[in-house]
Length: 339
Image (cartoon, rainbow, N blue to C red; front, side, top):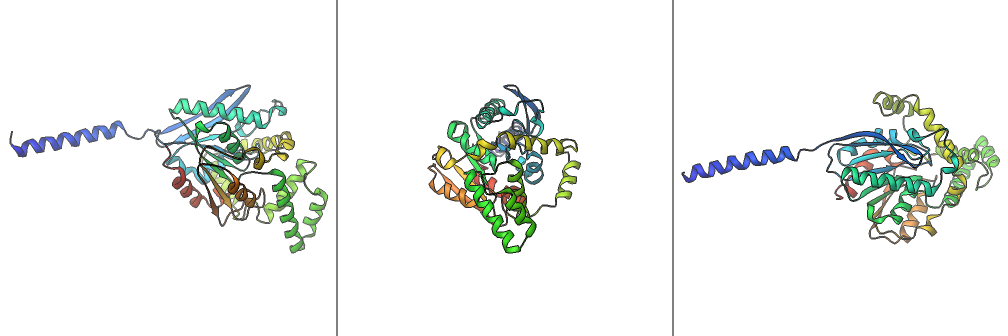
């Protein structure tokens, strides 16, 4: 065989081999939804990803009880092309809500046990050693508590506008709302504030009344969403069904009432002082709902192998939904190359 023919044959062989290997390693999408039976509850889990080799990004929604699965998919669905995104409705929330269940079972410890069962299930099912946790608000607190307890199962934690110190957050929200209402000479708001009283609040209704004012003043959403457009588009895209929206709201109210006392006493500045995993704080500059300054101060004191604060200058408490493009790019840059 001539040298030219030998080289040509080798080139053809290598080309065919590379194509065959490319086919063998073609991205396999993951598209599943199921209910996990965990200690008397059926917990809804939706798994979406364009490539099964990507790392797991497990969303932990806020509340407690505030299922944000439709919002995460509406605003942050493009991350499904970079990760295996897992949307998990916590016990008592969203599609996991059971009106017959005992609300007394809704506790922080119970949520941590549920989360551990979900994480173990995903690691086994998807063949991964660890997961990335992305926790928003109450979900950020849940993620911090879980990462402290199970560092070997978490490759990184994204704490998104996390609840750190509930009482301090309530105080900051109250002072911010009172100051703004006084500055605006908002008589009705001042009456609502007086009726609610100073935190800690004696009822969920009073807490929600102050939160409603915080939202009006741009402390929950600084960049307001087009709610009707978002809702109609989400329904048309199948991100939620019309009949589950009232269920989501009811579940949120039940969880808030059931966990009020425990959440009011939550203070991670004393209970979680160190982590053995990298942690990234994604904070909205105008968040006076749980207090972004509280989270920033906590980050400064936290002992962790790597920690970083990323500020969202046009956001309050909801950076994923207020600045979704920046948020999605940030998540990809921070943890997109995790194993």
